[in-house]
Amino acid sequence: MAREAEPSRILIFGGTGYIGKHIARASVAFGHPTCIYARPAGPRTKPLNLNLRREFRSTGIRIIEGELDEHEKIVTALKQVDIVISALAYPQVPDQLKIIDAIVAAGNIKRFVPSDFGCEEDKITPLPPFEEFLEKKRKIRRATEAAGIPFTFVATNCLAAYFINVLLHPHNPHDEIVVYGDGEANAVLNYEEDVGKYTIKVANDPRACNRVVSYRPKPSIISQHQLISLWEEKTGRSFKRVYVPEEDLVKLSQTLPPPENIPVSILHSIFVKGDLMSYEIDDDDLEVSTMYPEMQLTTIDQLLNIFLTDPPEPARAAFG
Image 1 (tube, one colour):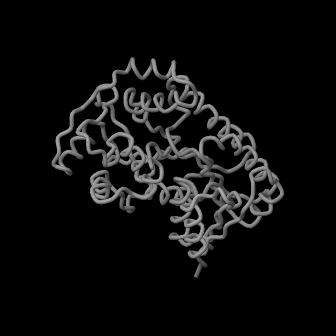
Image 2 (image 1 turned 90 degrees about the vertical axis):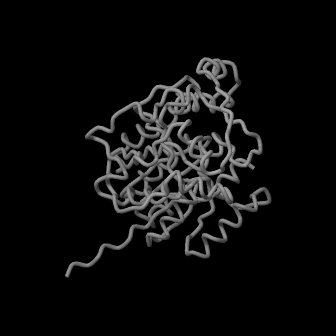
Image 3 (image 1 turned 120 degrees about the horizontal axis):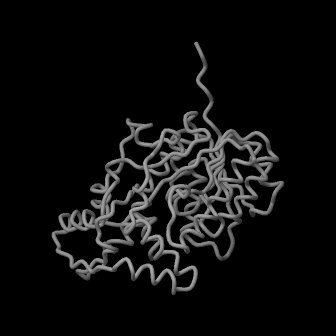
């Protein structure tokens, strides 16, 4: 009888961050020996972060404290694992070049998933501030390919709890909700816990090696108007829809100083242009829900039920 393959050993950069913690939890839940490479804790480390580190240690996650410029420390950590997942936040995206250099030096990594938790940047052209944002991610993709590192690039689209807060402000007592554009463009809202689970699955899946995987399950596709109507049904309230025309967002993207011009450009791309649904998933790419039809998703309807009682902790942390 053939022996079952040993579970992959996984190292996560940014594992205590907004999406990284969901990836780390999923990694442990799926039985993978898991490490997190994180900045050393200090006096300025937030209590939420310290609590998370305690939680992770209690579940068997090893936390390696270090900086991204400590090349030898990273190489040593990489030699003890099989798969590397980066969930570094946007300001640290260029620093992934240091991770790529370390992966090349280590020479043993079977898969690298860079921090790409958003839109499919190779297939859209948004307003200039968002375009500049995406170009930094594209450089990491191209550097990964040039280095010959086995990769999986993920296009996870919108993180649902985060964007539900942005769009609905669900605990705002006022009966007004802002609508960007005409509110008809479809977006893709995937719950953060599901993104974490899917990411661990694709990082270990031979089908996803050197491929782009889009997270575009049909139940996660929704327009602003549909989302607001569903929230009205849940709450029994009626909201006044206050429209922000496309030209206003374009003007703001041109007049606001950076980085304030980036969020309005993202809103324009997703909720006015409908960039997340503007392209077909071609034969060279994969769609995650068709790869794992057995996995039960948290639907938008179910997520709104959670918001009725208490917002998910990550969303509360992001918006105060």
